[in-house]
Length: 193
Length: 239
Image (cartoon, rainbow over all chains, first blue to last red; front, top):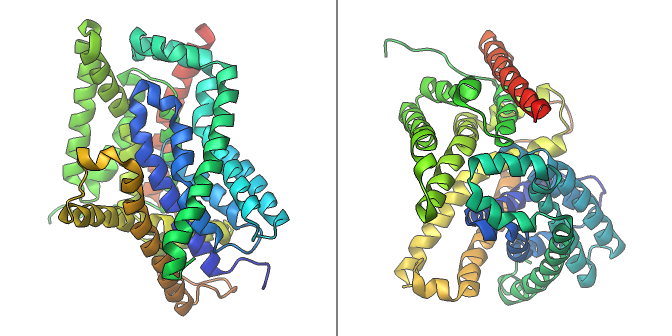
């Protein structure tokens, strides 16, 4: 098997990044409820396990998962998130790819862990809230009103960010496990996994 | 048919404008600062046979701004949250969404590939991104027909189905993924037939180059962004 990515791999990457992006966006709509917005990475991590595990059945070369991360980051950037998702998604996807490589792209344990790492890239959508916290808060107090800020303010602390990252990682592991079950139940029977 | 303006921007221009517009989410500016940036998607849509969406966009934006200026200071309680969410979503996100809509609906995939290869971006990025552009509309169509099919079986989006979300997710996800895998196979077969895997540099039927129109639009965008950035930086320095 050649190490270079051929056209088929590239098209597979494109299709699956569309699916993951659409899922993230659909759940992103829920973010307009103040409390749910902060739990958004966890929800996204829970939902993306199934397509990711199906994607892994098509991966046998280094670079495909990284490319998936880059593409998702670019589309996130183009659709109005900041440039931070490009960086986080690329880094997380690269680590996930290395983890997969260590398991030789067939170990179930490694693929579950790699989903946990990969999905941490979605924290890039949240990071601006934390980094620019003060500027963001004052802008929000002026624009969104005091009620909204008072609900959200206690959760924009650094400690909470760490908790959120850990929870997202765990949710990623769980959803990858669910993805494995769904894969066995539906796709292997249909002969496409 | 009297006024037939040949209005066609280069995909690169569209993407640059999109990237610049996406800075607008960062903070909220008053209308006279951001008006140039806000008007760009409207002009693009208006001249490319999307007059209706251009009109809806402007109407929505003005409505949101009016709500912000006149109603919000007096609103309280639950109603305020709804109004705030609506008006700020529209005034921050809508320009970018409309620009994205314009980019996707007016760019042909071949045009996109041609212009990306002209600016020597690696093909391993160009091909997936063009697949993304191509596949998003058909995925949305697919989701719609899935919803219809489930409604026919008595499992539409209602209270009963929302009670067991796991089932809902499974019923949506599995057919979607199966068709996605099939689409991936078909697309790669089609592109192999077209010789996409040939490593030689490709020739293109469509001529893409940056025309006067592109430079004009880029210049307008730069001016608009300059005003915007100046205002933003001044605000930061004072505060």
